[in-house]
Image (tube, rainbow, N blue to C red):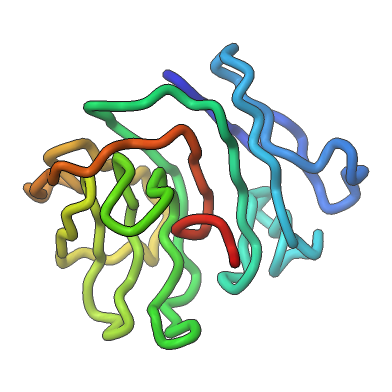
Length: 171
């Protein structure tokens, strides 16, 4: 894999010093992810189960310098704990490699403002699937599939940044 993050393996906790508060890349490629705005408590940091939990508002992670993709498969082991309608735009995606609207290789699993479907993007093209991610499992998206559903890839151009818990840089 290009990147591999494992919070439990890393031993990250809410008591981790600020200098060590990041996601270590276990792939050996050195793509450590910087974490921003986490309060380092169970609702915005490491939860009781030992997983990284976002408040869904301003917590996010980012890594830069990744390869530019023409094809991809992304896998995430997670559980969405709430389907909210944050600032009228829905719930943040799990992962994104979309540096601007219509560009980037993917946006994985965000809930639209209607709250009734999972949205994904593949090279700039929006796709809608009817499944929920409110139970922990392993989710995946590739250029033409999201959790077993066919998706359409567009002509967007990829960038070198990956975001966790947000679509792109907070402005």
